[in-house]
Amino acid sequence: MRNFYKASVAALAISAVAGPALAQDSNLSGTLRIISDMSNPAPRAVMEKLAAEFDEMHPDLTVELDIVDREAWKTQIRNALSANPPDVVNWYAANRMLPYVNAGLFADVSELWAEPQMEALASTRGAMTIDDKQWGVPYTYYQWGVYYRADIYEELGLEEPTTWEEELANCQAIIDSGRACYAIGTKFLWTAGGWFDYINARTNGYDFHMALARGEIPWTDERVRQTFANWRELIDMGAFIEDHQTYSWQEALPFMVDGEAAAYLMGNFAVAALRDAGLTNDQLDFYQFVQINPDVDYAEDAPTDTFHMASGAQNPEAAMEFLRYVTSPEVQTWVNASDGLGQLPVNAEASIGDDKFLEQGFEMLSNNAGGGVMQFFDRDFPAEMAAIGMEGLQEFMVFPDNLDDILNRLEDARQRIYE
View 1 (cartoon, rainbow, N blue to C red):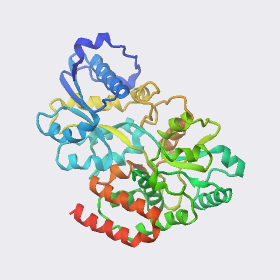
View 2: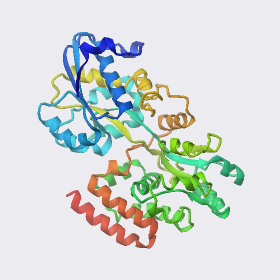
View 3: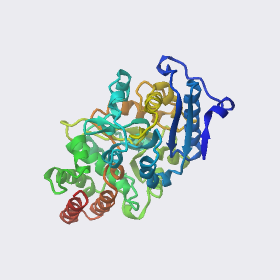
């Protein structure tokens, strides 16, 4: 569906977003064409409001918005950027940008990132950078971390761990109480990817993890083996629920709800499901995945949605102003509010809704993610490598003695896929 906002903007309820940060160039003119995959009801309303508000701010500019199905956009984006390209599109950060950067379809927006206000988005700069240039801007993300049963920790006299040694000690106390340390469901594989992301990034650092994702490091490298050695410490002590390969992530939630497991490494989207199942804020809490190697800074999984200017943009001046607009703290505040996306603003100067988990996630990602922001295993790795890799990660969790075969298989895939 195509929407032209000049004719309808007066009918839309646009909330005022005042302040000098939104003092845009009033001389913009012509048409700004945007293609967005924000097709679900709440995101669609946000996207329509963004377009209408930006249109209203610029009397001589017409904003033309196409909203397409989110799944369909994954196969349509290349053609859309190649033939009669729009000015701005939605996409994702990190390696998900790489094919379109390499094909010359995304524009270099490093000029924008050099402006002082962009320091407030520094936590995602690495995720927007390829070849030392920035290729888009983020507008929303959400945290991953360890959600745990605070009442069980209190019962056992445990504190939130900050080091690997404390994590292992807590886990042993939980096992001794007759519980599993962690719920997990790996039937659909990606949850094992989250564990690898964190243990590898905490063992070897963000740059190493991303180099592995780009195919620059062999899976048989001793540093990768150290990641699996650390992970195996938990597997060998029985930290995870049994038969996790038979459960989806949702099907594993009852283990935590019923108190058979004490924690879950998961994205913030799990909170609503845990609350719906009956757990209260007093029973639930959150901590940042612990430090393993003190020589590497904290890197976090925080899947990030982005806007990009097409290299063939017909109105690059308006496109750049739109990117500046959607990264401002005022806009990111209402875009991510509970009546909007219900997620986290990337801009560290933005405000968030009154929810303790969003508050903790925002504090963590804004002030304690200096190592970088990862996009998650199946976004950071190319699709074929991610699929083969996650199969190997799940197999390792069930059959850790298969590690050599798994790593050799992944290395064979790396040499084929990245050639």
